[in-house]
Image (cartoon, rainbow, N blue to C red; front, side):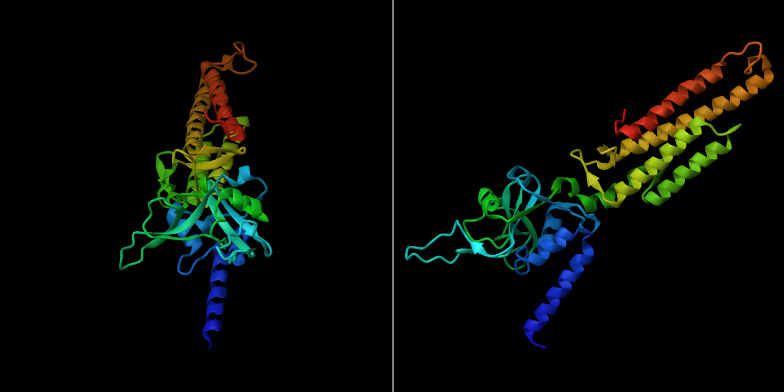
Length: 336
């Protein structure tokens, strides 16, 4: 087999592996366009080394097409040339010759918060190559490497990249950085009662079992409060499962989930559930106590001679309002 054929097979297998690792087709498209890798320096691996990105956990929609410089200046932006065209920023030597007069199809460059990115060697020595990372030029990394992209010298400036790019794609870096750390260290924050769970499925089962156990202690038929608590358990389990499938961190390094289109710390959501279930247990206790009280003093029963709320019923109404508040937290995304 010829060496060129072997290289082609290796490249095809690399693209195949990449396609399987990403759920977002734009990431696959960017890799296939070319320009992201430079020899042994692999772009996606280098970004993962730098920002702790769990690429295999990113869903479709993590990358989006953008149109303005303002959008491009936030997060990680990829500048794409769709077909060869003249380079308006070409430079000529003293003899009038230029070797960079054409912008070639592919990823021209990549910026993070408006700064063009370069490969860097991290942790290497004079005799041993370290792991690759990315960063802007002159950030103090050892072994500054090539600029990322097919652009020529002189083109790696944010304004120039915006000017010549045919397409721009943006990746919300801040929302997804720290993904592997979140997966490893944050899953233990799923608390149900006094127990901690690292598996969202076990967390879900524990919550349902807690609800069923409380319901079994209930005297009488199910009512509005039971439905509110059931909704709280169901919504919380769904939100937690979605959050753990794609971990995201906020500015305080807390795992977050999306509730009513708002990002909320996951610990606030699980705390909301625990508070609701604690109030539900109190509600059932008050209801059972009221049933015993009315049986002993039937004149306090509905339609009795002293038909008015016992202090147990007053407590039940107070707790029911608390439970309604916990349900509203999940519906509005505003947590107390």
